[in-house]
Image 1 (cartoon, rainbow, N blue to C red):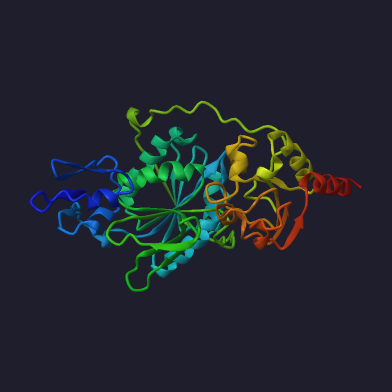
Image 2: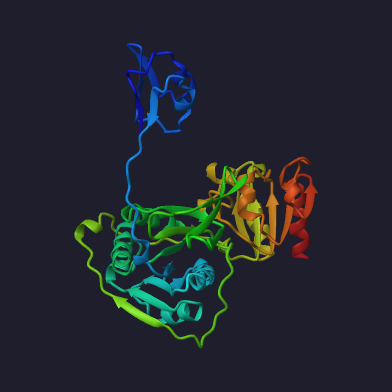
Length: 393
């Protein structure tokens, strides 16, 4: 926290003016800090000419890093189908494990793991740790967190990788907090520092304007979540052999504060946007929810998935699973069609790796055209019906 050295404070108010969060007041000519709203940015310390403000940090003890070995990949599955991001993580995990001269482990939480372990080994894992307690059949934060904590404390992995999916984003931060270590979310690059052996975790920052490389030098394990479609999968080899370790874990009643009721699939024409070769996305230019039916009709004709900008999702025109962008999903289709989307940098972060980008917008100066391979300047309500008519011929 930031502490006031009373004997040095003259109540000049320079710190009050410097604080962007209104966390400092002057009472009886002494600065008073509201620690509930203070963000520890340090602007007040820089503004003080009397050395009356200091940053006090808690002491920490680093772990013995030699006790931690191996690279782990969380083998996320739904309905006993491995999530595609897992195969990308196994590809990167294989590379990291070889640089660290260690083994690659897939951690599988499944009540029916029999057919999945061979697939994980064929796709790069040296061994698979299986937890097949009945409690892990359906995802809940508490159970998955407890499972990973028990396994991590027993085996002490050096690196843990997980997909930046709804499940990964939900429980992996809990694991990091419980293990008193760091977590870098939504990584787009991973490598090993050849000098220190630390995991170099690269991710977009400040709206995608810069790429930050983050290290966890003093604590273990090093934990990162990775977005889908940014890593290269390991080539599948059905002849690979590996070890399968089955763990039976104890879950206390307190771990089950949430009860899984049911999984409800969204109705209608659906293709997963992260898996589709063609994605047609709509934005604010569609004006209202009912106009997404026009987009869906076009997408169905060209066997594509329907995506959306954050503006369309925030307006409740279409559910969140369709959102493309920094706060949505990262996709890499062969063809991406942006309809009525201006092209904010947050949206571009989720689709700029597409092989071919087509943009339809009536604003010729829209940022989306800078990323597009083909741009159509015009009214989408005129262009889409023409396209639908042509594909129907």
